[in-house]
Image (tube, rainbow, N blue to C red; front, side, top):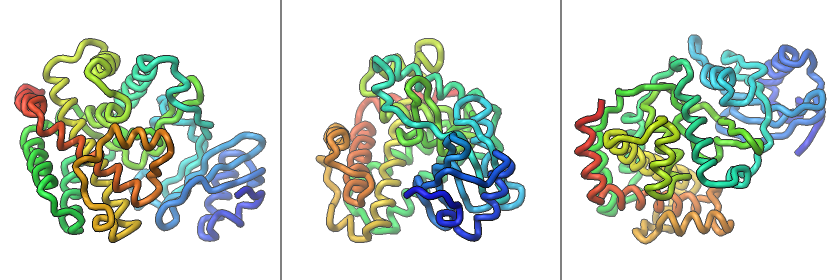
Length: 340
């Protein structure tokens, strides 16, 4: 949908705040076009906006509580050249305007997997070098909350889930979550990493906070790192030297946590869309990441559906469980005793 009037797209309650933002950023409320990119709950929505021949992203969020800066993270990231330029941000009204990046395929923009991994590692380096955010992170609380919701929902009763949660309890006891804190994006999935054909840009900073540096590394690796050689290359590119045993242990354990978190989030999304999905599509230990990746690449699987979310969640869960059952996981947990 394209239009030339704000009022036909922007909710009436937000219209004055959006007009003020446009005046502050561009000295005009005149627009060439505006279209909804995606909407969220309540008043939260993201728009593609054209003003004076240039294209921007307008985010309309729920206004922040006094003393809370909704846009601290994205503003700092834009200054660091990690996120697109911010032209206007007002947490009190929940309005933010930033540059629009026309995305190009990630793999098509880099001639080799090594170049892509180096670019991803460099982007994470720049995020972690930013001034510390004021927003604290709580990975342990997030995971425990998701596990609790999974249990309360009654979606799953298979013994595999309790086995996996038991392994995670060992992680809770031994992983040094509070060590090595940095500014972290916390959701570096492929949808939030854009490429303009040459440079990577990171968007959607809603989940960003201070956190353990291995969170961002693990999330990226679970999509782009497929074997031990790539893991070594990726970690070397990030740390600037060959990873030691302690770094490998923390990285390996955090990857399993990331698989589990995203699996539980997929289950949660699927359950919201279809309360009967767990009965219609019961847990299957045979669903795996290789199968799901192939279906995603061919278009046979859509993550916009409850069925797709459920299948993807099961594959992520099975990957975490498979790895947690391995001798490598036991060795990594033992290695955490030496983490500092």
